[in-house]
Amino acid sequence: MEQSAEGKILAAAKRVFVEKGLDGARMQEIADEAGMSKASLHYYYRSKQHLFDGIYMQVFSDVIPRIFEIINSDLSLFDIIRRFFEMHIEFLKQDPSTPMFVLRDINRVPHLLERILKERNVDIYAAVNAKIADAVERGDIKFIRGEELILNMVSLSIFQFAGAPIFKTIGRISDEDFDKLIEERKKTLAEFVISAIKR
Figure 1 (cartoon, rainbow, N blue to C red):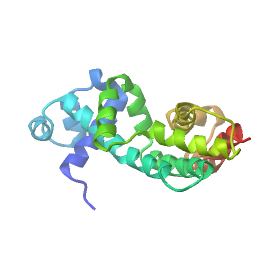
Figure 2: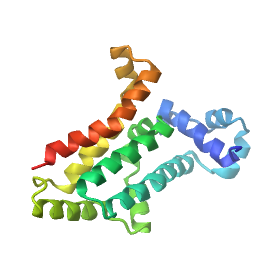
Figure 3: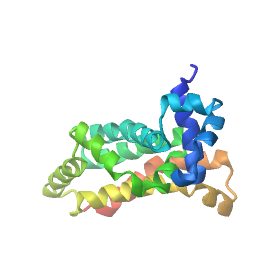
């Protein structure tokens, strides 16, 4: 399926932003990367900030509903953790540049994430804390704050992609072997988090 002009622009802009950040990127570079004129780029996105915000909105709008659907399911907390790692790692595998894009200028985007959460009426912390309270009451886990559990899970999931060049170099790991390792870690990371909170 042929990618739309807007899709090409977003993909090209993400590559430039990953390399140079918002401040270092230039609209002409993004236009060149997308294979179009600067005037054509401005037809879709009037400014660099508008384009930058558009990519963040695309990333968060794609992944936040998936996370909330898992948390709001009837699954046990342990199965929610397992499902999260399966989904999130697979999501990041589709475009490994996403973690570096998000992390590079993350201080600029809390307002965008807040907007998405408000638009969708999503309170992820409240949902996770409710699941934790149920699991604690049943005696399945030791108490942990929802914020801490989410931070642990997201950190473990994201950093393996953000740090991939270092891991591959130090361990002399091929791309193919690294992909196999990442696939295995869908399960091992989930079990690591579960064992840390299990009673």
